Image (cartoon, rainbow, N blue to C red; front, side, top):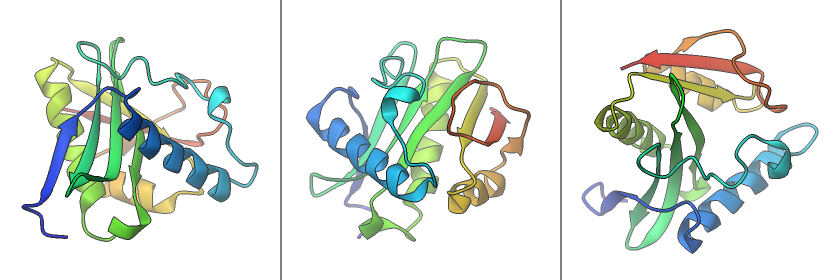
Length: 155
């Protein structure tokens, strides 16, 4: 994948292209989490808070093929990064890092200065990425049943 072919665009999370990315993300979580994953049990299952002016939903495309996504959920004293996913065909190319950088830039543009996120220890590559890119581990900040690791970053 040539990086000049890659575009990261903002899209409504209800758009069919975004829904496809999210469905692939949910299916991967269901495979990787010991007890499975049901999106209806997570917070904001419809990604309704990931729409401007409160948030954003970004997808990475190459040749019109979606390769990854990330959500920015605003509306509080902090915003959350949600649903970071990269297609297995694009892993190892730095796409997750690019999506996170784009989400952080979008947060700054929306006037957000504190970001939080949660993840599950069944996704060690996610935790490793967050720690390498300036996030710090914090105590639990939500009641979502799936995460067991929590992070924060000040922009």
